[in-house]
Image (cartoon, rainbow, N blue to C red; front, side):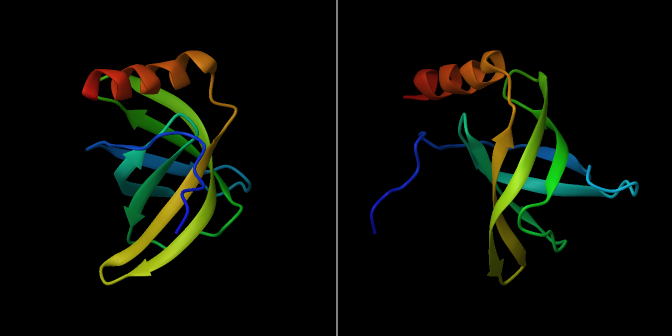
Length: 108
């Protein structure tokens, strides 16, 4: 299978809380991140999320800083213990994307 990702992915151990932003209901969902790139994240979650839905996310990165971002669900895969999701960042500031790239460079 040919790799179609535009940005390199790196593993990251972190948890974040996501809030759905397209309705007046605030649903907080805890997730476990598998990998992250400057364009998106892969994560596991027990809850069912919908493709195309945008969530507000607070991502704690390796430096213990918190990145405030919006992510859109683009992929769902059913797993034995929940679901695996892929999400792309929506409007992530270039400075925050650069922090992710620096982390990847340091880890190599």
